[in-house]
Amino acid sequence: MSNGDVFVGEVIGTAILILFGAGVVAAVVLNYSKAKDAGWVVIAFGWGFGVLAGAYTAAPLSGGHLNPAVTLGIAIDTGDWDQVHIYIAGQMVGAFLGAVLCWLVYFAQFQANAEDEIAQPTLGIFSTAPEIRNPVANLITEIIATIGLVLPILAFGLTEGLGQSGTAILIVAFLVVGIGLSLGGPTGYAINPARDLGPRIAHAVLPIPNKGTSDWSYSWIPVAGPLIGGALAGVIFNAAF
Image 1: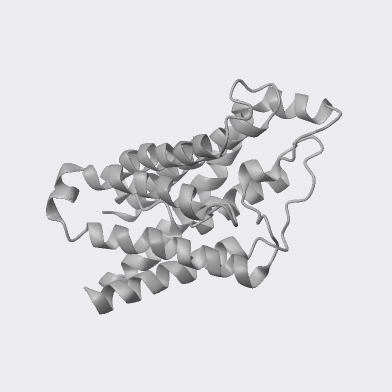
Image 2 (image 1 turned 45 degrees about the horizontal axis):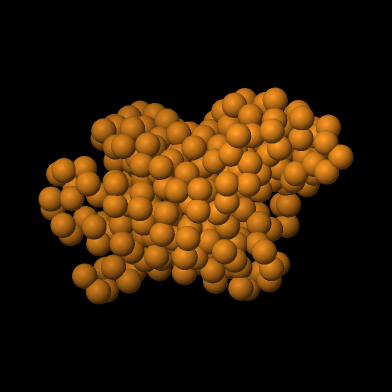
């Protein structure tokens, strides 16, 4: 795959991922949305479908990593680091663009939300935040959850038929749903540095009324945790398989 194909594929695929993922959160939490209060299960499936749509779209161009932790785990497994920076650059740009697209889709709701007497917080639409702010516990949660993502992804590659049929992407989408349902409670399961940092930057720069803080003091955890988890998954996979 050429550098250009990889970059374009990751930009488009990650943008679709964030459009669906941030979009489902906006749908559930913003006032005047038809999906208002639909709940955590809807959010988990929305993110899973975002992975499904984004990865299938990007796969012909880049393989559809959409996640620096996945890219890092694969690089540690294969020893091929040549295009890691291209993948991560595309993922970051795509994540930012996807967040902007979500904001445009829900523009009227963001405006109306700011005018309500009880405005809903907006950062949670774009990025993650812990239910209990404990940096050590939050970091451990993100590390373990990301191992739970990247290690199975690497193992799926051992089953040749999954890759040839394209079924692997479908299984990964369900894996993301499962992680959200089982491990997402403590921190909101970033499990993807680009997924959290790109939209957080978008939240900081977009003209969202009464948007509040972008919580930069927490922002390192959903970046460092998934990167550590992805690296550990690559090491474990090499050692075990």
